[in-house]
Length: 288
Ligand code: NDP
Image (cartoon, rainbow, N blue to C red; front, side):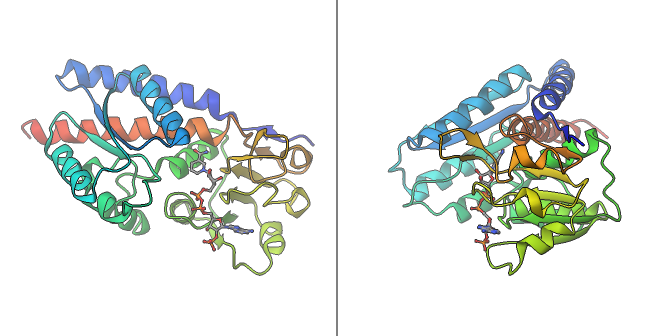
């Protein structure tokens, strides 16, 4: 058996094309979707992520509004910027690129974003809504993982799903999405005592750890569907995921590659959220 490759690059291109159509329709009704991109400091990886997001926005007919501030910006200045963006009607989505420099506390900044503009889906209001099964904005990476599963017609209801990693931006929302889709979900983390045994029971495995070989191929149940969120460098400096990819091809029924799997889906899902935010804002303006 050789696993089906879940091609995130191709699906992301499809989704971006759909988003571009929606943006055009919105523009015809007088609204250009606007994404405010807040980048603090000079972190090279953050700069690359922001560039990719801005390029995707351009392809989708979304206007990316750049707000760059030096690493020594104060907490108050950043908070003020967020409040100004909340009040700016040309801004439909606000993205604060993480991580912030050490001197800044990300939590109050993210909490200050208007939940209706929280296209990253990190605001407690949006996470709470997701937990209750009535999502508004879902964090882009887990949303992209769900789109990959849907595109491959993977049955989720009644299946055992194991999510490895419990961060607020990937693992936890992913576990909630799978729960909402009626999987039986196990959420693993660094204190899980027998990760191999947990993974062995999984029909669907989502790895979001950030460590090379965190999930070993021999742990997989034959026929498992594997979504690899991890982005790591191996000993040769090559980009790779958390799961042993080559060896898993013979065991899994479907798997995402790294690169070309979840990464492009994250950006496309963010664009979907921006257009949704703009549509909702327009619906509120238009008479009943
Ligand atoms: P975090 O570092 O915030 O979380 C990592 C999680 O992995 C934690 O919950 C941690 O457990 C758990 N963990 C660490 N070691 C082990 C272990 N040995 N066994 C089981 N669990 C373990 O990372 P993120 O969620 O932000 O990101 C995870 C990975 O996904 C990274 O490689 C990141 O680069 C990538 N990523 C990729 C994106 C994409 O678009 N492709 C987007 C976002 C992230 P504990 O909670 O106990 O510490």
